[in-house]
Length: 96
Image (spheres, rainbow, N blue to C red):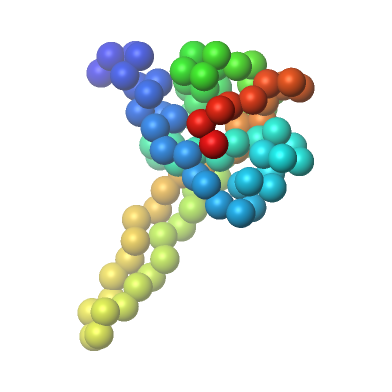
């Protein structure tokens, strides 16, 4: 896979929630839905290259998928990885 394409795949989907909006206002941190095999170094490089900002820190966590039922059939949503990217002072991302 092309490296520039990989960078866009890493930051393709922002996670926009009430908690994430508060985090961006208080801590200047933005949340992204990232591939499960992406590491912190790749995430930092992708955000800096795509949005042209300086990243202070990257925190990641794996969100476990919820169990769902539809009648008798039980299923499970897939697990996914969330990255919380804190930007340096004065930096912003205009996508949100």
